[in-house]
Image (tube, rainbow, N blue to C red; front, side, top):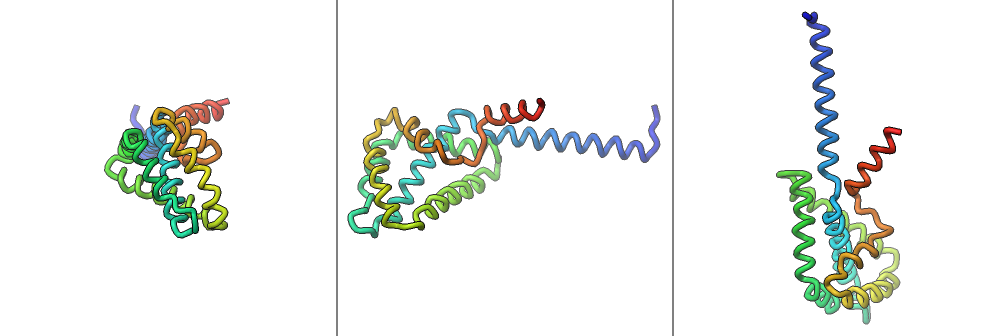
Length: 174
């Protein structure tokens, strides 16, 4: 079958559009979080929350958490390193050569979110963080993922888990 130039252009444009949609869906699927990556994100969220609290509260009387933060990092050094590797791997897998830039943006945004939360009243914020530090330094290394997950329950990671993506897609087909 021979197509006239206009029909060939329409067919070609349709094919290109279909390929673009397919590749953007594939890219979106590649950016979803595996269960291991979700845990790594939750651990990073906890670590960032503790870091921001340490920096924010160090000038508040009797609320210097530097020692507790150091204890937390020392106690969980191996787990933090493992989760950090997975966390970084997600950005490399999802964004290729731009992974480091995206990781930096995510971490900066996360720290800014926690910092904004502290601005509603530094004294009250720092007092609340005391309980978090007490619990965080007592968590056994094998329980760090569970503790971080419990802490992240009401917070958005900002990236859907792969299971959520499949559930969303199935819901749209109905």
